[in-house]
Image 1 (tube, one colour):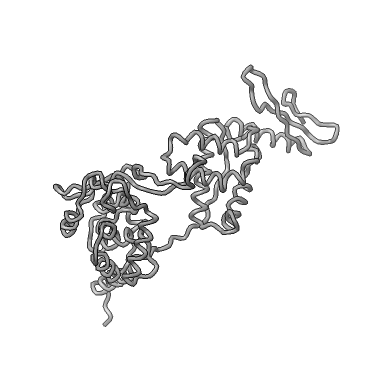
Image 2: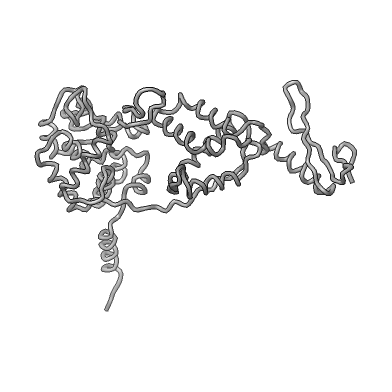
Length: 374
């Protein structure tokens, strides 16, 4: 039976009602909420659970929608993100998060909404085209960042577990040594600045955006190194006027991506051959003309066609460089720094793919030492 002061009572409609203080206003007034159940025991248990959740900050009582908080998160971080990162997050918010969550009150949000959202992305995407597991995971990670922002800035804890879709790791194809040699030979035929740039990427593993942003001021032929300090990319224009996309140059995505890379000795003569003034782009030899990543990718497609290589993109040069370095016994830490990674494990996990031949060689080596067949 209810005790005096419990704020639990039996209603005329037969149900039990329990009241609790859900918030205290700035002028110290208590705002009450109620829960209902068929029995005293059930309603007391309901009320006690809510009180514990309130004490732990796990109960959402905001009347605002999740869409409101998503916009606040984007607005808050606009000046904190690099422009390329902001454009990426803006696109995710505009294309996926707001269309689904805009009208859902934060207090009603549950794991059911997150699961339905995830399933919708995996099966329908935006225009009926399913998204990859990796893309869906990236979108959900942004949503998780929104939840963290709500907790930090509004002191509202969203106790919802986000389940990420399984993302099977795909082993990226690399160029075979024969393909690598063929491409090298194609680039050396009637070599020009753009072919020279691809040759640099083959020898150093730099990213396409880093190569496009290279100027001769980044090349030090006295100490034989090139200095990566910028990257170039095409992004969506959010200004609402002018072209739909714009080309930007900015610092690379992490501090470790700003780095010095030694120039191989056998490329020094080519560097001297194409040397231009410091303000000139390496790929064009001109100060007022550059080649953007998309245009260089098109040139690269022509080069691999001439080399009779199938299904290759520019980023494959980075994979190939890292893998061949490992096969030649390159020190992992040194390779990681050349690639601009923050740690050696990233290099091992992301870019180094042992070939079947390499696996066979190691198996044969082990067996010759440890296994007897007669």
